[in-house]
Length: 442
Image (cartoon, rainbow, N blue to C red):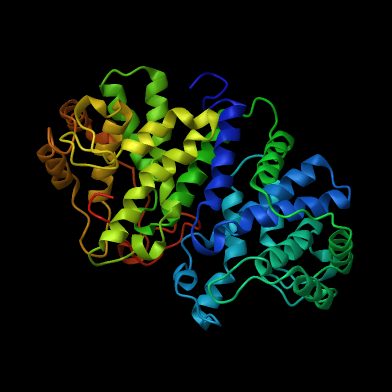
């Protein structure tokens, strides 16, 4: 991976941050393009107020990540929309600013983004949430986000309604000035709109703004601790789509690094396979949660959706130079030694060694995780299943290395369970209901 791009370098941190930003854009339904659109509009408004490059970078990141707390939360409401959410779902939605802020709290160099996320649903008149702040007690960046969030949402097609035209959106902003919106921010938006200074959303404009944000926020020589914290956050975000696996990505990476060590792979490869473990399920951000949490057999179409997560995750990593070497591990970790896997049905040593390793550690952790349709297997039983897959499902040499791992490696892999053995919410570290199943081995 190289010293500058490795887990102690700025490029590594920048690559992970870009993965987090783009990963939000891969979520289906409500979050598909909403974050980037909101972020770009927020930056345009911020420039008009002459905010500093650092403040603009924070706005960009906050705009993309403000709804990160929605990942894994009431997604069925977007797949099967109703005119008004039922009270329990509305209550869950109101939790997302706090969930978003708590997640960002773990990421070094983004500390000043946290309050922007936490308060982005506060209203100027005090009727918003989570604290009911009013007027100038609301951070200025959050006031910009409130308007950008609403404007972007109104301009997007939603299952329950068509997009609004710019004239309708302008009238909504006018009516909301002094109520939902800071009057100064509302007027600035209306002025920019009238002057034709708000261009339509374009991916290239967003990616350019994203690059400027990374440059403005990240100091040279970002530490290894910074990269590790962000890597953990990415794993938490991925696992939030499939909550029975809370901590799954981290555990797969830890075990994969141990196997790579037994195999005598060089230290750089050992480190890359560990990071690959954190990111191997990145493509699940594109799989609807109703599919990941289904507790009965999947349809052919649903199986296809799940299987696409390998290619989708790899495609995202390939676009990020600092992480591109991890793409093969992501793409091929569900291939089988006998050629019966997916996505390309390659076999034997044609499967990259990192993917061979992840296939074993991913399967072991899946077997020892609780699911709605079966109990978690005990450690010894899961080892037996891995042994039975030697030469069929799994690479023989990798199985031998995995089975030789000392017991101490498996001790402490899992956090304490919540009440009644429920897994922990990977974003909030509180018990949640068990809910997930995917296609066999997914």
